[in-house]
Length: 375
Image (cartoon, rainbow, N blue to C red; front, side, top):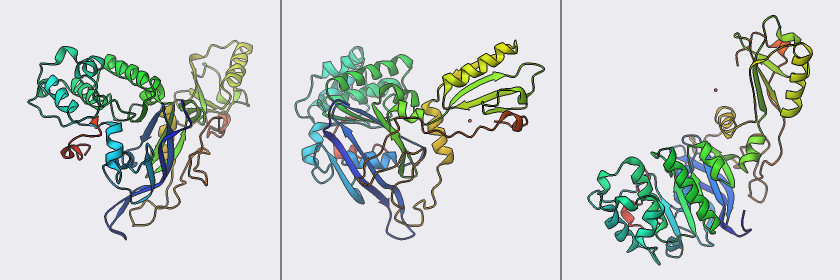
C-alpha cells in the first residue's frame, strides 16, 4: 500500500432491490472496507454475492440504500460531477458503436474526457496500435476487451474500476494487461478489480475481499487469506502399508484408492516428519506432492461452508454485516480485519479412523446510455 489516504471508503454499505418488506431483496448487507491511493484491491465473490451491486454504487451508477460511500472524498452518486472526471470505468461490455473504427472510437471518447491522453498513446499501451482502421464489430473478443481498457484509461483516471478486465484474452494478452495494471499502480493509480480468475487476483492485488451473500466473508492480503487455510501433502500409500502405520502426529485421510491426504498448518514440520518416517521404513512415497493452500481453496471453502440464517429474501435488514469465516470479521469501526497469520483448524481425521473415507470501460464521463451496459 503506497499511502494511508483512503481513496475509496465504504462504511456499512447496503443496497436493496424492491420495496421494503417481503417483496424486496438485500443484495448488499453492511459492507465496510477502504482502498488506499496507489493500491490494487480485488473484490471477489460467488455468483450473486453482490459484487456488481457494490461496484455500481462506487462508480456512481446507483445510490446506496444505506451506509456511507466516498470516492476521492465525494459521494459518487450525489456529487457525480466532482468524481466522474477523475475515474475510469471498464465495464464487462463497453457498448461502443460497432461501425466506428478503433481510431474513431478513441477520438470520440477523448472528446468526452477532461485532459484526455493522446488516443495513439492508449491504443499503443493496450496493443491496438496496429488495429486503428478496423471497425469495432470486426474486432475479436479479446481485442474488444483491450479497447474497453484503452477507453477507461484515456481520461488519466486517479481511480480505475476494472470489471473482469481479461475475460476473452489469451494468455499473452492477460499477462500484458497485468503488466499494464502494475505500471498504473506504480504511477499512483488506485485500482478496484473484480475478476473470476483467482490467479489474476493473486498476481495483481495488494489486498482483496471475498464476498458471499452480500457480505465480506474474509479479507486481507492474498498471502494472508490463503494462510488461513491448511497446507496439503498428498501421496500414494505404499503397498503393504496400512493407514494406521502412518505417524500418529499427522492427520491424514485415505481414500479407497489408497491416496493419502494430510492437512497441516505446519507444512515444513509435517513434511519432515513424513519423510523421516518413510526413510526409516525404507519406503518410496509415490506421487508425493506438498503445497501451501491456494486462494482457490480459500474461495471454495467460503462458497461451500459459509452459513447465513438471513438471506435477505424475506425483506429483513440482513443482520449486522459481520458474517465471516476463518477468524476474519468486521470491527466495530467498520473496517475489515485482515488475515496475516494462519488461523489454525483443519478437518482431517487420524489415518487409522479414516481408511475408508473419500475426500473439490470507459472513463467515468461516459454517455448516460452506457450506464446499464454492465447488465
